[in-house]
Image: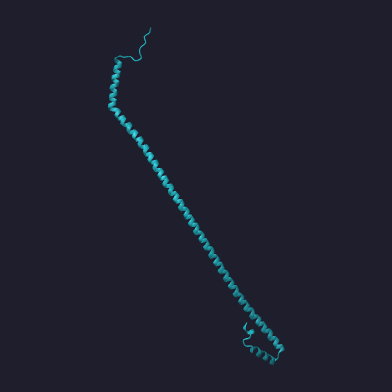
Length: 170
């Protein structure tokens, strides 16, 4: 029969290992556990603070985003107002320019009509004078041939005697 050795045997070596382990545990606990524990707590607090800072930064970023969005909307409204005012001003200026152009055109047309009327009057006067000269000249020629001196004098006296007659007013 074979003897089977127990898996864990109880002997003095085992006791010494346990005592050594316990002494090492106390030394490590005394000098290192507290430092490691403090380090771990500091690290944990640092991570928590970083998460808090990140959350605060995200909150601030969202606040800034909302603020900038509001500002952009305000700028957009202002831009639309400026464009509307500029368009309105341009339309008024265009209407004014068109009105002034119509007035200038009417003034030029009136001036041209007046000039045409004046030229007509000058031309009519000139024609009247020429027709009158031709009529006088023709009358002289007719009178010279048909009337003698006595008849000419009576004709002239008759014409002069019509003082203020309708024939002399035009």
